[in-house]
Length: 404
Image (cartoon, rainbow, N blue to C red):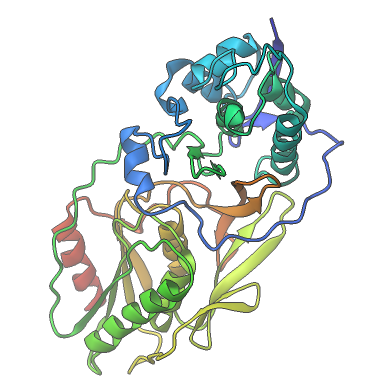
């Protein structure tokens, strides 16, 4: 039996800092804060979301034991958890034996598998949003376990799933060399907001929708240009203001979204990402492009400038706004003459970084918390200025406010 002691605080999760934190490996910031726009609704329904069916296993968030283990580290107490590694992996979608046959009776983890899994755990320890509060020796002992006889990267998938579950940041995910996706358990949510009906606005109100987008390359520019073209078509010299509709934006790549809505958002800093050490990296819109840490990421080839600069803005949100969608919402927080209407967002207002792994696959690790232009930090659901549950009434109330 394995004795595991987890010491915890309320939010975030596990407490006990390890001074032997490994050096931070080379990384690159991902432009996609979440996997893709279709994953959030599936996660809410508890469905598996592998890009291929190989090694998919069971969803950890569907298993009661895993939910209890993850929830335990969010309590304000010290908890002694007695559980065998076999039981933990069995509960988290794996088994005491490897995912594939034991390769001729070998009972120890192969050098290849151990090196790969150690690399992944080192990245987690050096960069996780909870790196300062996780008891890393206990974390590693639980993740590696005593029945470690995996031989291939595919055999490690149950352990990777268990490690993501222990991180409990609700946002990290892993994509294997065979395109299998393993996600951190999602945020517990009772999102029942109805799908908003098509919106029609009077001539004195501008309207633009900022939806989800996943992908990179030429598609980024096309998406951003499409939003600015919609702004161009709806702009009026006599406009009372703009409705920016972010409802149902479940995330993806935030940078085309920011570049597209830039003429309304305005030039300058709009938000930032703050790491556990308090270091902030800022983003915004400038010179027809979304800007990250002073550098342009997505530039609109045929930009538009509003007929009336710095307009009033009514922002529409609901509980299906997640991740990159929440970044857009936070970008409007603290902006003058701006008010939000609707319901609170999903609660993934954190940022992932992309870490390619030697041997194949990529870890998308939650590393920082979103902040608005005033440096107010979020990390959870973003509540609107005015709670309105009915989608049609949300639009009506926004128009009423813009005309005041």
